[in-house]
Image (cartoon, rainbow over all chains, first blue to last red; front, side, top):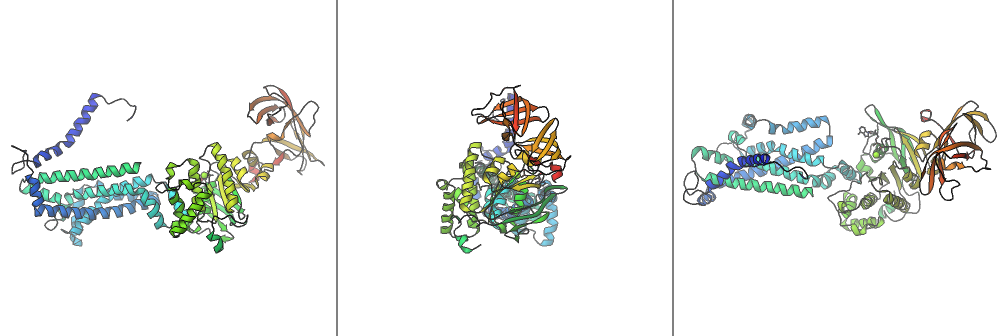
Length: 262
Length: 378
Ligand SMILES: Nc1ncnc2c1ncn2[C@@H]1O[C@H](COP(=O)(O)OP(=O)(O)O)[C@@H](O)[C@H]1O
Ligand SMILES: [Mg+2]
């Protein structure tokens, strides 16, 4: 904020305290991943990269990373296409009814994911989608839609509707207007939504616990199993990589937004 | 339209008569119980420059959008060269349009903006480039082809919008307040350019404005709108000199309004009684006893010297005055006719205005025009 009063010492203390509190669990993971011990603990005598090496040499971990990656990419594609079309449709209609559609699309975000997962379990049982890559991809893709709807709707709110009129007035069909005018203008919103949808799938656990068991083991699922079964420090190494990857994606999102802002 | 005219879009056309004629038949648009446009009928001949003039909210944009196809009329029809196009979607009409605020595509360069309608029509790259260059030449922006709209001034953006609207040889060019976002000096400059452009391309233009000066200086025909109704349409001079209603006289320029009652209808004209003053009014034929409303322009009233006589004379005192450079604007209080606005050329003015100064005003029998009250005109 420019020109306002600077924050007082108490406010500063609270702000930094909150940040510290939020980041504390993350900061503990990093030293643990560098432990020289064979179990989940802080380093005793020195730092070691042995658990990172173990991770990269482990068939099971690499397979989990690969599965998570493919699922997240597929789910992102589903979320982006469905979410973008929904947002554009609502924007074009612009009535009360479209407001309702938008609220409905946000439901997966509002409903506790465990409730959603129970419902999914029933449906996927009937549809024979349990414990299959396609099933998890669809589940993540659908629940990722709200992120895309939100970011694309925000981008559309800033879109000048006269640009669409101008394009159509010059003879452009709906498809041409979409491709050449609307999509380029809202692309930052779509990218932003895609990144969030990707992250959503990448670290989703609750639904996977319900709808997958042996065939499909995503990275969060593998970590979960690892914690329950043995306290292998490799998990801390995985967690650190997960954090780095997520931070990278968020930085990418920030870059997209700042470019769009210019 | 012949193939030949399609191929040479921006070549000067042989005078007027090469554009298209537009007709509105009893066009109405209602939003719920509110009538934004009320049974407007008008006709624009080929190659003419029509301006829709009216205060804000009078339905100008709605009419233009109905012509472009963005607003579906509640009733009535839009005809192009006698063909009913009311049901045609906007992309099938493809009239060139300059929007309020221009609506340039911010993510495209100037050249890409202008090329857009050509890209839509799948013209070859070579053809596209040639036409874009010709269009940018036309509006003198050839040096700015690679800039983005945000890097241009308001006047330059306005010209890009014009080039984009003209490049695909539209049947009709629609302009929604194309100059209103510009400052006064630039506006005057672009008014002249727009007029020259219209003459050069010979297309039919429909312009919307709330600026009466712009309407008078640009148009072949002006349609005056109020509350969604067409009040009067005609050539600028005809509208200014012979307003049909009080609203037209008031909106187009300024006007004094005099009320009187017909005493006798004689040979030079009507003799009217307005309070204790007798007025002589040419050119109207009304029975004695009828009430009459006259519109009298400030510049048609003269200050009379000692010995000067006029068909109509009234004495008063200056209540207020303002120096405007080219002239003075006086407000003269009279006993019978109320306050009268008088425009006095400043160069060799017969008096030095001051408050309370007694003056004698005079005007000819044909200086004023009888007008209708707007409620009676409806
Ligand atoms: N979509 C709409 N819904 C309801 N009322 C509208 C709509 N569009 C225009 N109007 C109303 O119609 C009237 C005429 O609007 P408009 O044609 O934009 O006027 P102008 O361009 O002369 O200022 C205004 O009172 C406006 O509020
Ligand atoms: Mg308007």
